[in-house]
Length: 454
Ligand code: HEC
Image: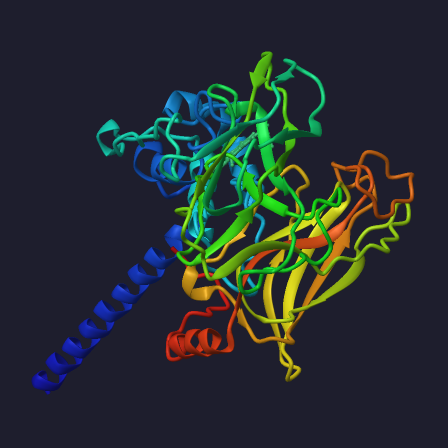
């Protein structure tokens, strides 16, 4: 009998221990979910996030009006930071993470955990933490250098004075290249004047030249010349933090003798008068070298019959571009104006299969962002594929970029008119190269449809 009692006692003790362990586990599992009970500090958790995703713009002489280098800089902005990152307005990166391709070059966007960390930090009083936890400061490159190597030609835009206050300025300057012979372009980079980065919201350059006859694979008239009828089309885009575009070996663009460059500028006053003179640098292939493929930027899925009634939201338009050749797409950039709200691009294969490529679900007119695909996820699409671009506009007062929600708006060149298409960079591939590249992809799990959490 005594033995039975002892055994029972042992069993009961074991039960109690297991129950206690389970209870502790349950409490432990709950704790991180309760924001505010977790001690998130600036030095340990917040600073590394700011270094990676924010400081390139938020530092002296860069683009943003406030610096986020030190605790003292950041502390007063804790609430605003929480709000901006939770709304995914900062860093500026507006790709819908729940659909399509998820791997991009130079992606500064935050994971859900990082957003939660910043929010928890702000909610718990924006604590500094142990100074010893602070990572070494991020080093920023000397802004005098060209990332593409030594340029063969540097072209300066006109000098532009941005007043200390006032509204944003959008406009164009056209400048001669002075080029006296045709040359194939290997790399291109755009850069605002030293000290003027903070006023240049974006600089987009276009080549103005006659395209002439095709001589590289894929070189042909671009579908729908760029705004203003520039046959040479889109050259390069700059937003802060952008280095240069170096074209893959064997691909290039022809810059013809006598070509001109159009600088499309967006300036933003920052509280002190600032003079800018943006430059674009070109590096060419050697004179005797002719690349095999033409890399081009093209209007895609244009829909020019826009009908945006006053006071209406979620107005959808659909545009289509059929790919005449096998195509490898390297980047996606929605182009909408002030009323733009969202855009998706999907591929309709010749066999009818539809694949969602990407969506921008929170379009902001002030940010012309080129989303460059990582090489091994660049869409490979067979000839005959239809690119379908779907855009949504918001012509109500709830759109803060809307200059006047009482007006009907249609297609036009001015910012106050609207547009609906995507800029897409791509190369055309021969059947042989296309097959080889598709083959090379097989077995690799590169087309994830959800964003991996960092
Ligand atoms: C590509 C440049 C860029 C990056 C990267 C960037 N910002 Fe900004 N940020 C700006 C600019 C420019 C402004 C001011 C104008 C505007 O709001 O568009 C700004 C404004 C802000 C504001 C002020 C909003 C207000 O209330 O006035 C906050 C807060 C902010 N950013 C937080 C962040 C955080 C946090 C990150 C990183 C997670 C970040 N930003 C990354 C460029 C950037």
